[in-house]
Image (tube, rainbow, N blue to C red; front, side, top):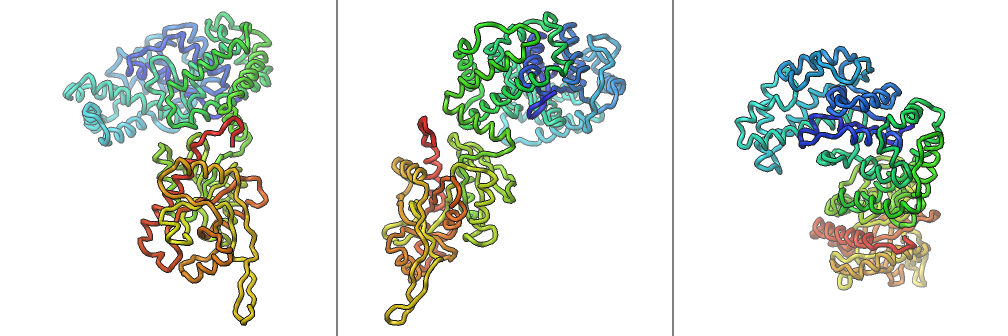
Length: 611
């Protein structure tokens, strides 16, 4: 069976989890969720043996029990346990629940709807041990906890010390809970935390995700890793939009032949694969839209997607698809139409383009920010964290870089080069390597520079290079007096007019510091001598606003690429022999201002033509 991304752990089978939030998921909702996940996503399904055998919905519904057996026997649902056989699993449950027989009658001779012939998929780690470890860590962390949470954590810590070999269930904590300040609050908090830890344990066993949006269980949606790809309310609206609403809503027994054929036959593999590929593209595109703005809230975004699907449904179909040989091909055709209509929206179209590139095994970033010093890198990290993000270290293209996620709707990476342009790991080699790997649309070098004139460019002024002149390429001759005469042989290279325009527009509404746009000098020398600085200014014909060390490497690396680039650096000194004066604070301010201006530029929303 084709799968995309992670498998799905069926947390909604879990009786303990439901009861921790006072919810019993109905047989109908369980069946709908299973059908949606199976026919629309093609994801492999799994659950623990415990929640499978203890599920109220399965135990109370012969229809659902038969449906889940079909899933298991056709390899679409894996039952996980650390015990290699079903008999050993049942024996272990009987030992664990000796003091709790009334709650777990299925392990003590009473019958349920599930035959004891189902195969068990072994896993290497014990859920009980994982629960005890996870709860122990949770109980020891008292920071940012409310009084009620502190009370519950104290109960957990005390009870785990005395646990011996007892099962980690709510019953383990009952005695200590009765002595707590608010027993009813403490046991509720503990039960929910048990369910969170249990869910995360099994998610980790097979690198799984969970479905979201299930009525009554939305408390646990925070465990989800890739919202909204497996969101049940959205999947319901997708099914309705493409004409599968009735097939999903009605009991599977009314279309039993179709479902048996769907799960058992490989003859429709291409049609299933085509439908799943398009659903994966839809999910990845919506996930990209959701992650692109940190202000997005799960419930609000879900409602937005649902309303959008309902608004376009009449453009897609006016009839339901009957269960039969053409079901999947018709659904796939209609889903293609949905993608086409949604792509009229610029934000969705951009997200879909990014998803397609990623599906091809490539990585696409809107911006790569190039820095050369720790202070410059830290300034970028601080700005990312202030927006709620967290740089994630990655490695590719023979270089380490940091994925900063989405900043104002643009995906951003940061790479640190060695100081200078032609040094090992310098801006030439590193920029060439990282841009070939990440394929960014734009590259912006940010950081610190020297200003040409103390009176014109105060500390913190941001310099934007409309042009860059490499000063190392020179002709040294003699003048009429026999003195050395130095003439620049380098050419002035224009930065991307589009990015310069974008930065200039941001500068007009950004008031943190002055912004100067002009010619930047660049070379491998660390300049801190007034006479030498003036000689460099003479080479530039008096036009330079400042200088730095890595920019010319950026120019060389991107000379034959279509990538847009610009250099934005803050003034930290004047290359006048006083570079060490208040060095750290001046560099930190300069880097902070440069990054702040760049991030303000990213905030400018492109029109229909985009950037």
